[in-house]
Length: 139
Image 1 (tube, rainbow, N blue to C red):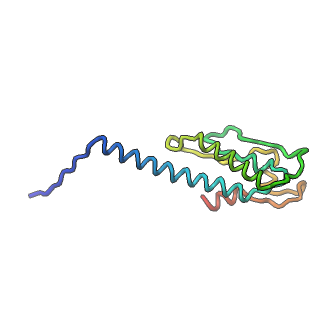
Image 2: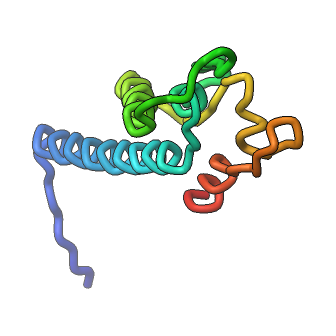
Image 3: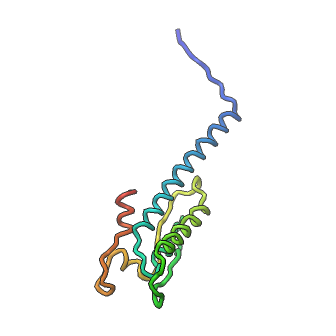
């Protein structure tokens, strides 16, 4: 003899539950991406502000922001440049449909991005390894 329990779901109730789950998942992913953007900005050096304001969040391999430091003076307010860089990334993130995206790319297309990341004798700076740290922490 078998035992069973039958549970019927009201389709609209199930749809509402699924919508709530999707919103919760999207919020968690978006919060994680915001944390990653903050991480990048916090570890970015600021001289002229060109590097920190050149970070982008993309869903494809197209170029992002790429500001040059050539001919620019040292930033008088580094924290202002950091805030501008973070706002740029938050604006990028706001345009992304998280639930229909399979790839997120953080990138920096400033002409000196490689030198900032890896260092070099020409610039006489150590590598800041901003994106290496991001990968190490967030995988």
